[in-house]
Length: 391
Image (cartoon, helix red, strand yellow):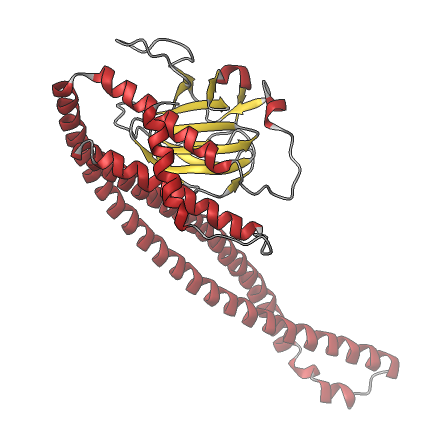
């Protein structure tokens, strides 16, 4: 491990002296263990931030604006989901209203027919039938018919009233849904305006950052520094997760999934594992998967979120610990949908495609590591095996 990595872990462990301590007679529960784990991750992130803030004010500004963009994009996605839900609700309510209107129309027609029939048989009201000179059997039959006729008329009237009430109720719900839809649309427009402004700020920050990098010695130093920082982070995560509590569920070990995993997002492989990076001796330790902004990124396997935050060079980054020293990394995300400490299942949506970390193009940087060493993702993920993607 590099000197910088040792310093990072030393600072982290020093900060952990204030973490809760349990006596031999007070065995920590998994809930307490989780709190300790989250505390360690928080201290790790604070250590990274302090180190980053001392390097470049433009880097700090980039982190702030890209995190803001991620949050706004997440809000836009959430509001978009609400709008879709409201539209579906309106369609269902409109169909319900039409159904009750059609039923009301039929019942009105039946009731009109019965009223007309009652009018034409006005001379045969029940009292007149009783005092008529008809044969008793015929009289009894007519009285039964009369009772059925009266009950049917009452039922129709009740049905008409029921459908009128339902139509009025549905109208109220439709107006409410339309009002909420309009409100959501206004929120969406507001968030989109904010997102456009934030992206404009980001563009200016990246321009200033690139000028600073050029002035300080070019991109090679930057690439080497970012690679070392990622390695330090992974080393620290492995130190933290040695004693991480395990769930009470059985899962197929990650090592046995080699060659069976689905790719985390549907897209086009661009930067390939092991290829040399331009103008340097560094090589790609993962792959870049180009995909449209906002497309969903999914966890390739079951595990616990070890890191979910911004990191220089990789932007909004998620790292999943799959146990037995296996990690998967997802970088350059626009929005992060999971937090450190959460368990995720295979295929769970964890983030969305973006270009954070100062990238020009949208895409996912994806790595798999074993004991801190990068693995070729193409040997783990099956060809053409991809999760269904949604915007």
